[in-house]
Image 1 (cartoon, each protein chain N blue to C red):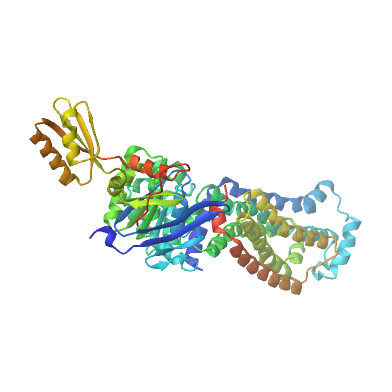
Image 2: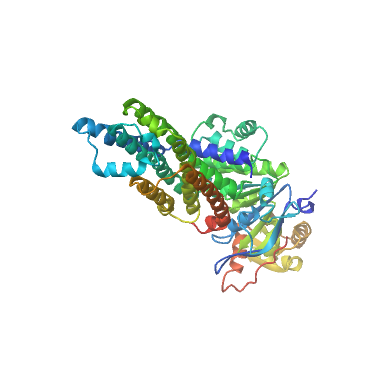
Length: 268
Length: 323
């Protein structure tokens, strides 16, 4: 694999993306998603003046507290805010990735439809290089949006949240979820979509394959939200290891099933 | 040195490719030598693009082999051999949202060229694209896109250049500049395969033509094909009726001699020998010869005769392809 060729393709993809109006959509969705937890955790109680905590939430908090000692000593208001901000943390990851799926879904199909794939395949670029560049081209913008989202999110919590909320949220666990687990899950989702993009004729179909990964992540979120399940640091590290292996296997699988001839001769 | 004596840069042997039940090309064999332009002719669906793709290593043959510089083109060596081939695809295939320069720069990097920016600048200068380098590909005319695509195909200085319908849809001036470029490339010693429907173009630029209709019907120079299919015809205009002189002509050139008004026509085998003999015989017999013209069949006639010979129900057998 040639890093020069991967970088060449990546630069081309990002340049192309920077001139696509639709590319800003994941950023807009992320900004909107960022506002939601602030409205729920801070805005609604401030407007209604009702700072009592719902019994369902206190029940969940009771279950969660044993895994989350940083909640001890916080006021009810701060605990509730920390709970909501914790739950919406994964939105920061899911929203940009969901937006990037459209880019990934279009990656191979778009080249074919624009008739740019044939000259590209006539170069020394290998299938592996093309696939890696394609997945990175949709992954890196998602990562950038996620990073900006994290800064804004935690900045907003520091500014607007009750005392102690930020401290309760900033932990090795959170860092691992945001910086390791979530990006790997994103990479897998986008890799699946890029593979699908090389196998189907319609980008919408390709995009749907990404939900295969997003849905389990959503399920984990819901499980955590109900206090039923709590990801610990060792669990996150183990999951990250598994996800890394899964991504490498998916990449190899994608290379194996990338049919240059089929794409050139059968797709219309 | 005659181009046919040079070592082939690309050798196709028995190339057969099927798509399901449909045979796209069958048993195609020919050589492409440095400093040679070979025009690939054939009706729509004859397998020209498939042949191009096979030679460029984009698709593999079901049977047969392609050698580039003596090395068989296989999946394993394809990446390295693709550096030796420049392919102009049927559609220019430029990235619309990238500038002309960015399009070429990406390809220069994909070929891992030294100093890609300099190579791109040189290429832009060669193709007269320097003033359009910042324009997005989407804003270019079809002719300009084709020019950029040609620049892209030659960016890595390939020894063999495969051009799939390079002048299709271009205005005459642009088509002419493409033909001039093809001649330049030939003079630089590159081996060029050009697929075209434009027989006039093939006649103007090609050293040899390959007529394809799934199978290769013929691979020869246009002149050799003409001779093989039609021979050479001569038209002699005399003063007064030509009828009385027909016998004189037939004694020298007995093939297909006819008299019509004041014109005599006949087929000859060796013009340098038969034309002076006919004129001499006519003058000795007392004919007043006004003009003598050697008539050549057009490449279009040759092409149509060859393609027709391969059509179902044709009484003619297929031509023999020589390589």
